[in-house]
Length: 124
Image (tube, rainbow, N blue to C red; front, side, top):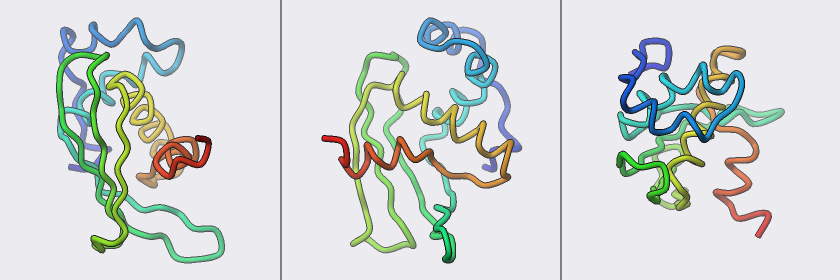
C-alpha cells in the first residue's frame, strides 16, 4: 500500500506510543503506526548523481514500544544486498514518521540518512 493511501491507526494503538514523541511527530504518529502495522515498505533510495535504487523493507510487528523489532532491507531485489538492524519499536516508528514526513515533502518513499547510518552500523 502506498503512503498516500494510509489510514490513521486506532486511538488505542496510538496512545501507547504517544509519550515517545513530541511536536509535529505526534501529528504523523497515527499514520506511522498504520505503516508499521503493515510490516513492510517499498521505496527508492535516492543516490546523488545516479539512479534511485528500489528497496523492500520488512519487519516483525508487535504492540509494545519497548519490544525489539528487526527490520530487513533488500535493495534491487538482490539477496546479496540485504541488511538487518534491530531496535526498539519506538525508535523504529520514529524512523517511519520521518519516512512519512519526507514523503509529504518529496513524494519519495525513503528512510532518513540517520536510519541508513544505523542500518550500516556507521556510528558504532
